[in-house]
Length: 118
Image 1: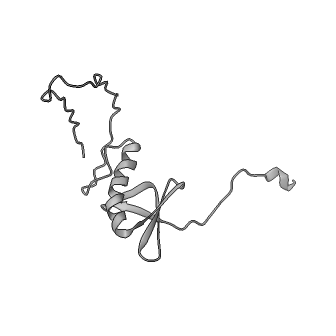
Image 2: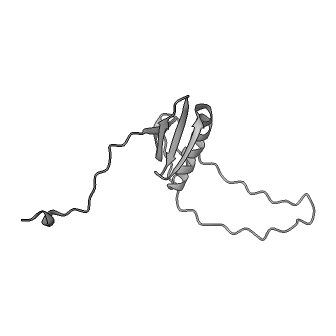
Image 3: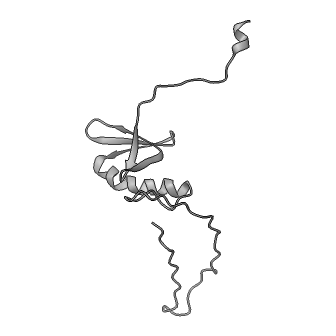
């Protein structure tokens, strides 16, 4: 048999060096990789496509928000809280709101409050 008979479409690229990000001690943040920077910063890479460099203090404030955003985009109610509960959302149908128009008087303003699951 010739070498052409064993042609493959698979490549192995690596090894990769990166840090997983864990918020509140529960499961890693999906699609997120971190790299420590000299001088105390951190480089974050989302989905192997988007990068951001932050100070450690800014990362401490931003990463819980990002963890929730990634979890919500993945169909969960939020990133697991400190008790470790991961709450899956049921399919939520879009709600139609009446056309926004100027209220008849300042006292007649409709406020929509969404239930908080997390």
